[in-house]
Image 1 (tube, rainbow, N blue to C red):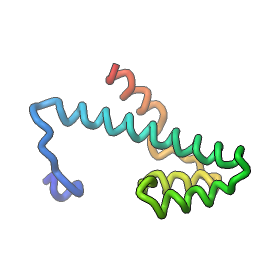
Image 2: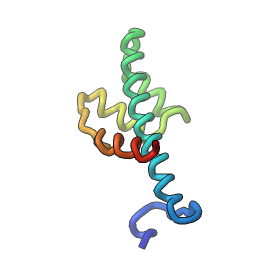
Image 3: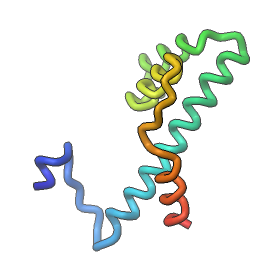
Length: 96
């Protein structure tokens, strides 16, 4: 069943470790989106075209496909959240 639902199935250890990994990945996701927004803003303040920074990210190992996608949608003015802040807050509270 897991093979049909996802790209990969990983054994992380005893019961509960999958939940911990989910919290960790969601934390990484929130950090990545925030860093992407800060990077685009900083580029603009430096007088650089933020779209050129996206192209740099796209063409180097520094840019993850998700960060490039989010940066592209941000530059297009689309700020629809793919991961609602209320869920990020819930996960942060669980992590604490």
